[in-house]
Image 1 (cartoon, rainbow, N blue to C red):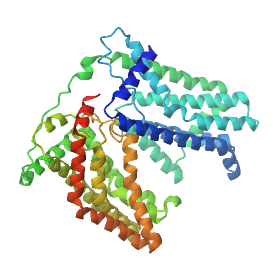
Image 2 (image 1 turned 180 degrees about the vertical axis):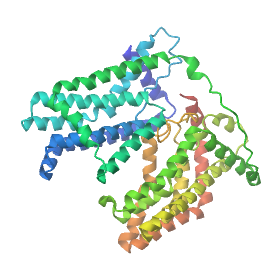
Image 3 (image 1 turned 120 degrees about the vertical axis):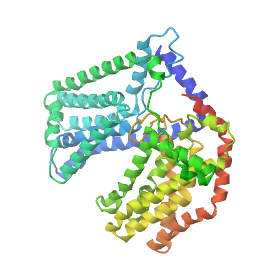
Image 4 (image 1 turned 60 degrees about the horizontal axis):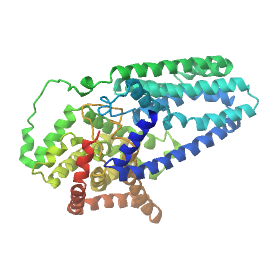
Length: 489
C-alpha cells in the first residue's frame, strides 16, 4: 500500500503545472542539502577537538550544556520551513482504503524528512570520536539514541502544533529571552537543562524515556489525524461576522484605487496577509545584528548594504513576492473580467513602495549608530524601490502557489508559499546591490559604493514603463499556467 501511495505522489509531482520549475529547484535544494551535510560532518568530526583546544571543559558536557538551544532552534526552524504531512484525501475516501493506511503514510513521510536524519551527520561522527577517546561505549550509545529521539519528538510536536502560532511565539520568545539572559549573566537556563542531557550519558537507560515519549506522540498524532479525516469538517466554511469598509477616498484614483482598496481590505481581514505585515515590521530590527557591532563577523560595509536592503524591504519581500498568489482564491474570476494587467500590477507596486517608505521612516532610530548606518538604510530603500520592487513582481509570475488567506500558518506564513523556491528567488535581489557596492568601494572609496547603489536604484524610475511592459508580458504568458496551478491542491 505504501508503494501505491508513493506512486501516486510521484505522478502528482511530474504532472504538476509547475513541474519544470520544481525540478530545477529540487536539484538546487539537493545541492543545499549536500552543503549542510558536509557542514554537519565537519562539525561532527571537529567539534570535540575545537572544544578541547579552547579549554572550556569536557567536550561532551559542553555540547550537553548548549544542547537545549540546538533543539530549540531545530523546533523553530522546522516550524518555519518543514512541510506538513499533506495528502489529498478527497479522491481516496471512496476507494477501498483504510484510514489507518493513509494516516500512517502521511506521518511516515515526515519520519524520513531531511529535518530528522540530517542531525545524524553531526552526532554520529561526534559519537565515534567520543568512543575513540575512551568514553564508555554503552554510555555514548545511550546518549546518542536519547538525543536523536528528541529530534524526532520535535518532528511530531511540530505537526501537532501546526497552525498554532501562539505556541510558536511563546516558544520562540522564551528561548530568545533565555539566550539574552544567559549572555548578560542574568539567568543561565543551561544549568538546569544540562542535567537532563548528562543523564543520557551517565545513566544510559534514561534514553528510553524520550523514545517512550516519541511513541506516545506518534500515536497521539495518528489518533488526532484519523479522527479528523473526514470531509465535513475540512470543507465546512467558517462563519464570521461580515464587515464593510468603503475607503471612498481611493475612488479618485480610478481602477488603480479599486485594486488598492481590495489589497487594503485583504491585509486587514485575513490572517495570512496580516502575518506578512507583522513580519515586514520585524524586519526593521534585523539591522541591529549589523549596525550595533554585536557580531564581529558582520562589522563591514558589505553587510551593511545587505542589512539596508532587508530593513526597508521587509514588506516588499514578505508580501510582494507572493503576487498574484494573494488573489489565488478568486484569480480565475479576475481573469474573466476586463482587467488590465498594468493596472493590477501597478496597484501592487504602489503598495510595496508605500510600505518601503514607511519602513525607512521607522528605521530612523539607526542614526544613533552613526550616519553610515542610516545611509546604508536609505540607499537600500532607494534600491528596493527602483529595482527590487520590479524583481519581486517579476518573480511572482513564477511562484504559482495558492495561498490560504484564512490560515495563518507558521511565523512566515503558509509553508506552501514560503519554501526553498521563494528563498532562491530572493538571492539575486540581495547579492546584486552588494556587487554594485563592491565595485565602487574597491575602485574609488566606500562613499562611491553607496552612490553607485543609489544611482542604480534611481535608474529604475527611468525605466519604469519598460520594466512594467516586460513584467506585464510575462504575466500574460504565464496566465493559463497560473490558472491551472491555482486549481491544484
